[in-house]
Image (cartoon, rainbow, N blue to C red):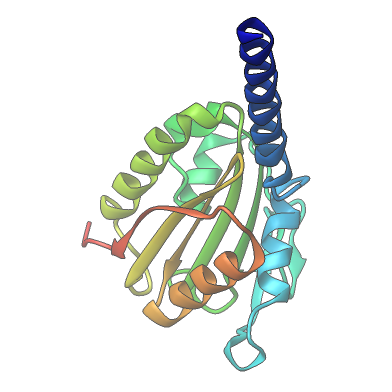
Length: 187
């Protein structure tokens, strides 16, 4: 009788562990690519806070919303989005959204990590890159760096725009993990 009871308890524990594993899969946001992520955030932006914005690289530029950004040229990723060139080999998909009048007012990006284990190290490199930049045409006030599933997501710009981005990101997706946020330091 004791053996049967032990076997039954073992089976119940295995079922419970299996259920926990499937629950974690259900918690995924089901994001298909970086552009979808940024579009979801932008489309939920409060109408009174919307600003003229476009996104993407020079080959895929989109007016009035986010666009795909090639990950092929690390120097362009760094120059346009402040994504560290040395970390470009760790991503395989990207999208951007930038204020059309001044990128320092708002620049946001989403980057799919090849290996999510690199997320925190790349987030640290992004923060360091933001703090070490020489800025033209103004100076961004704040930044936020977060992870959503296997995506590194960040924005920098005015305090108001970064706060709106963070709020919309948290509202659009579950399991948003803010990795770093605060004022951008002078380069």
